[in-house]
Length: 412
Ligand SMILES: Cc1cc2nc3c(=O)[nH]c(=O)nc-3n(C[C@H](O)[C@H](O)[C@H](O)COP(=O)(O)OP(=O)(O)OC[C@H]3O[C@@H](n4cnc5c(N)ncnc54)[C@H](O)[C@@H]3O)c2cc1C
Image (cartoon, rainbow, N blue to C red):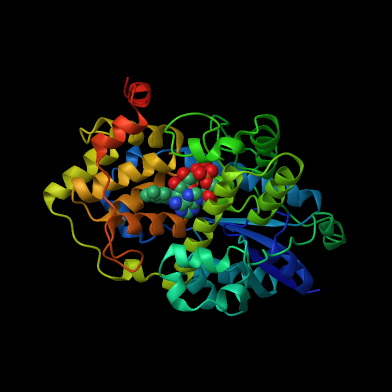
């Protein structure tokens, strides 16, 4: 059987994984793990990178190790390359005698360009979406221009069914017992982050969040809170890295709704998954266009304001609290992200792309499409939104941190 290379960019799981299954049908899979390059990399030169959070790297290592351990159970080999160049890919193709590369659709555009430049065919498979590529292709382009018409068009469409279960891999892995696993099992991982990252952590979290605490029943009224372990679902990292499938999450939520309760909050959580879906497909259509328009060069003053914002020294307490939380935990609530972004773009007058780059280097749940989409939406004047969305930070602080608990917690 020929070897098939499988790039699991943002699809780091065995369960419900169309890319893995397609590769397995075509040959003996060799899983390739690579770091995704920053988009665009030069923006990082303007950021205080020595202050960036170490949490994303720790979480990614945790996700890679969990996947490598799962694959090892089925004797499926893993090759880890870090930031891979075309030459490294080419060397791997020759060494493994592979005849095809499989990758999830909507892998990073740079990654896709690189794969397309190699000497063997690359195949893109649907991945972590509720709706299929075919369903999206039937949507008129104008519906992808704004979320609300998109949502009303698709909300009653059937979601994609789940792919085969992991047991499938038992057969897939037969006859590969001596394949080498190249993951470094000694890498140290801190487990200080609360966000579930691996499939196992996500299953445990769902057990607590859904079934024990039944916190989803008050999601609608708590999702904007700045603090609180159960205020929102905390599933973004698992979804962004693809350690958990959104279709599997939907199955969990449906089971909860059928056996416990379905209310406006359970519907509100699913509604947010459609925001994610929307940005994934919008990102797929826009590709790099939001970055191809020249990013404005910073004046010295803007550069200074950008650094102070990154270092939690903007002088706006609610934003500085958020930037401290981001640096220490690699996570922020949606409301805190909106306030931090609005401050940088509308109060400090720094182009949104620089803020998006800082989030990229600090968020555990960094997702190119959700991050770019949300930043561009707040900034306005672009293909995502004509209208700027500016927040009154004093009003927001009064509304969402009336007793200053959040500011005191992160700033003292
Ligand atoms: C400036 C800015 C940057 C952002 N960058 C990212 C990012 O890099 N990665 C990311 O996953 N989300 C991003 N978001 C969206 C959102 O803030 C996070 O998904 C959410 O805070 C994660 O916490 P949660 O899982 O508890 O969310 P919940 O409120 O429980 O939402 C459930 C899920 O729905 C999805 N979702 C919710 N809100 C949004 C949204 N506005 N856009 C897209 N998907 C959404 C996420 O997958 C999330 O896990 C960003 C938002 C802003 C304003």
